[in-house]
Length: 495
Image 1 (cartoon, rainbow, N blue to C red):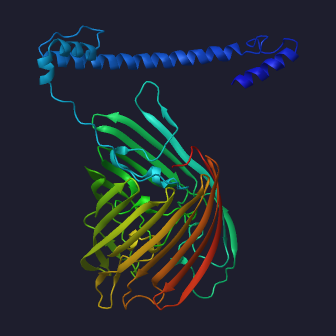
Image 2 (image 1 turned 60 degrees about the vertical axis):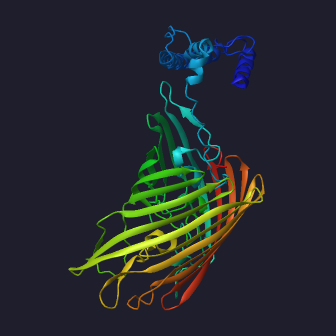
Image 3 (image 1 turned 180 degrees about the vertical axis):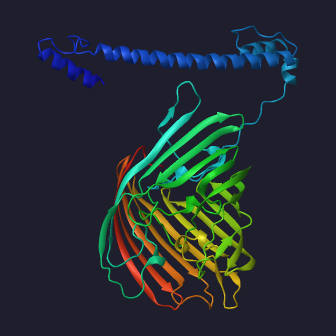
């Protein structure tokens, strides 16, 4: 603002004094200074009001302490802390009789923050709504106790498939076409990963309330940008209600990839849910969630209907330490089918997953996850939409499909501004004899990238991806993809 004022003042001087009348001969913008002073006066008034409220609270505390000790109530304008201190000094026996102050609250253990270009880690719900890393940019709404942090990023991805690779905007090995195809290599650009988010916090009688919102533009099945809700949830006193990642997932264990999909063996899925997380101290916690059920069915007629009489129930144990974390979670599902007018009995779906991270050599991170279950295809990244929860077997019975998935990853920091991540994933289904020969059987996923932070809010990256898709009849195909990305963050990336 000073540089701007000097520039305008110089222009006024060169024009023979016919410039802006609010600028004097020394090049000082008087009007701008007056506006800045008024803004500062408003801020000082707000601070004074806050000080008055704090002083009133201290007076009330002092009055209560004095009444308990039989002393006089301090008068208005007298600090309650000073009054109670004077009373304690006058009567040492009474002071000794006072109960000891409460022990300081245990410092919450959290894994060392790591960079993730997609900003997934700062969006995830945390115990007691603790911030992740060094989140910046909070704006206090004047006259309220509400803080708002706007976030998100603008991003463009250039994707080149060296041979047909299936899904356009995410590398999903299960969609790699098998057999003759007319398509050849292909290059395209999209902005679907661009994101807008808002993090709102305010105090309540139960603790800090956090309301988080985020959207991207993956609402369609093509590269056309279509609005898509990612998160909309509130949490207070560790009770969460809204729409976000399933309790079954471990977002902190997700490897960093430029590819939006990530490893094929990763757990996935967002749902409307209610969740409670109970911290036990020393990094241990338990969570339970009731979540909206989605059933993914194979080989069903058009008139088939599949329902769940109860929500999916997720349980999660988590341990957090300074150098990493470990999580073990489970999911339980109820699925019923109506095929051709015949009601199939309920079948029980279940799954377990173990995941974690470990900081290596102060700046690197090792990541892993392994998942197994039956009727949980909806929760495995490469199996969504593959009809992998339940199917009708050779006897006409509704059965769940056993599935497993997993991945390993290693994130290495070359220096303060650049890093790479190597990721490998695997997914497999135990097919039934009644399934089509073209039904999904297994897939492999591999990714290697390099990401460079030109500035705190500007990132460039390149990634090589390889995938292999195998069908039930064991025919297979593979594909490779190259991806280049440019991203502009609204605020500095998470660390």
